[in-house]
Image (cartoon, rainbow, N blue to C red; front, side, top):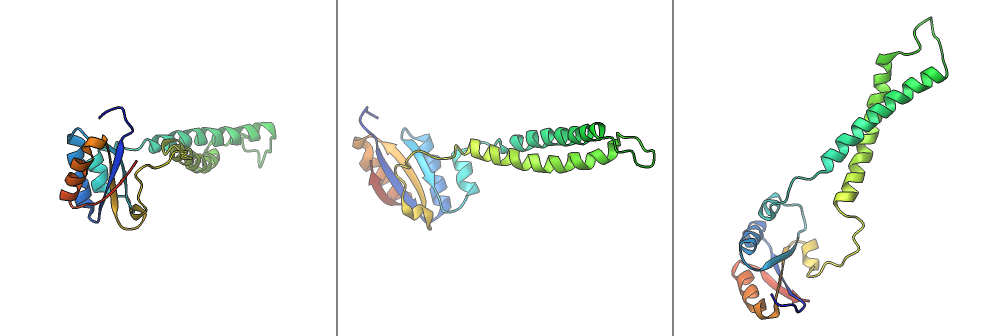
Amino acid sequence: MDNASPVRVTGLFKDESKAAAAIKSIRKSAWKLADVHGPIPSEMISQALAVKKSPVGWFTLVGGIIGFITGYLLAAFTSLRWELIVSGKPVMAYIPFFIVGFEFTVLFSVFGNVVGLILTMQLPAYRDLPGYSAAASGEDFAVVVACADAEKDSVQTFLANQGAKIETGH
């Protein structure tokens, strides 16, 4: 590809298996797969793109651990700070503190999950989506290929042979 601004060729596929096959072929070729858009999440396309497992679960786990510790310590602190002795029982009742710890585990897990989603999805998105087609929000899977202007025809021919309807743009 030369230093000029790349041309983006968008192939619109009705069938996700054909889109996944085209993605695999493009990844093996010298062309650059710029983006893929689809109306629904597709496991087949994720496998074709070789998408790694999301790290959001780690954010959830860390949030849950922090939440349990925070809840347990909060219950212990309030019991020690404001001693409320009932029927001569000890102020530090460890087992009931687990209930508070569990509730904070759930709460902080949700917070960790939301923070993980925002960070991994890189929200808010401040970039345009070059090569985006509105049809990808409806019924088609869009495979966007960036190539040099001289290669545009061969990319269009390749995508058309894979069963795509072609759109071009810069």
